[in-house]
Amino acid sequence: MTVRSKEENEVAKTFEDFKYLTFDVVGTLIDFESGLVGCLKTIGAEAGVDTDGETALAFYRQARYMPDVGLFPDDLVRVYLQIAPKLGLPAERRFGEQLRDSARTWRGFPDSAEAMARLAKRYHLIAMTNAQRWAFECFSKELGNPFYASFTADDTGTEKPDPAFFEKVFVFIEKQGGTRDDILHVAQSQYHDIGISRKLGLTNCWIERRHAQKGYGGTIEPDNFTTPDFHFTSMAALADAVEQTKAA
Image (tube, rainbow, N blue to C red):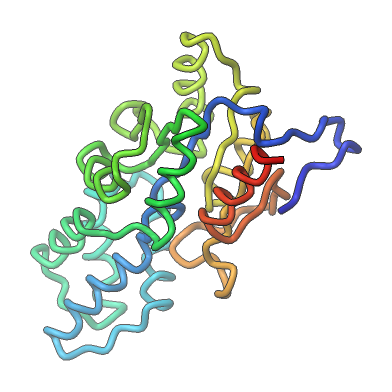
């Protein structure tokens, strides 16, 4: 665990200082990389093609983060048609739709649901996802519906790291009498969450899901690495730390 230094003109906070935990969902709580790769491997097996997971994620990342893309996961149809030839897969729309629809069955990381249930006993949990509402409802169900409130790309009209996404959440919390000082933002993406949350004055917690793997997988690499306020490699470790703080 890491805590921001006082040299950065911040007073170090403890877990008792927060009322709200805001969460990135896809990649932090839902294992979208395994979901994507699993579906592409299934399509590949039917076509007699051996699909390498990390190669597929690299092509996905390039295709997903182009200008003027659609909302996620609907955009996976376009993404598939772009990356299929590079992977030797059949470039047919029906397979793109299969990739899109696979989002309904993506699983949470093994520790996600249990950790969220523990955290929900102490905080209001708020989802902040770049996914569309239809997909988020599937993800929330997979996680045990732990959220007090949720914000999707459909609700905000934008995607993180756009500050406007965060502003929608700030307005919601302010209407409840809270401030951004009451928020701990929890996420795995340096690009979408950790960097921008720091710029907006939030305390953040980086869940480094790919700590045992090289590179950024399906998530775009940030221009600059942001040292988080708190740093764990799993949601279970975060929940443990919270409970230890409360018990102390």
